[in-house]
Length: 297
Image (cartoon, rainbow, N blue to C red; front, top):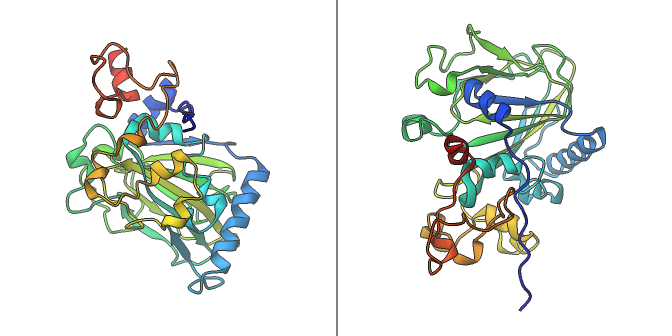
């Protein structure tokens, strides 16, 4: 049997980025994508939307579980450009929560009201007040130089708040930040941050991609299970991150073959040395997350 070659975890949060993420609830990374990469993702959006009978030219369009719709989107499951950030949070139980595309054409009523992501009646922050139970990576493929272009609006630092007076409204709120970003920008957003979407009163159609991750034991947001034949087209890490298990409890206790997901980026090891006795099997060992390592530094 051929020996499995394991990948080292791609880069994740720097200390400065982690400080910003915890303070503001969002990180904005401009010039993360080249023009060629932006065009590649735009072409993939065009392929998926034009093949969907629900798509209507000039109307708002959203599609979920896009990683199963196009090979370009499948490549985002474990893309080294961003997956290291998610691995820093969820480690060996990293899971793709959902994948989406949005097309927001001009239209004054084409906006979204204030809300956090995830559960509403009992938000994620109730159960995880320090770390997010979902991180959402946004790929911005359209230049948004000013407001009223379908911009994302966030209330900085609001991921620490369970309540917000503007909830279910579209009213401007003190402390909000309207994201006016160039194409090629990536955002990393805490699931609990309050946000809304501006109306698009420009002559430009906003197009972007969202890839969200969570711990394996949370239910996925855009599928129950993935198509088995499609899973066979993925690499090892992509298949694991999809967490399409036949046994429900594998979401909490994944099978041994799914360990390690990645090797430690600093030590290239599949374990934290000096913690367990040698007889403890790898898939039963707790490995420290980036947050734990930084707290102990």
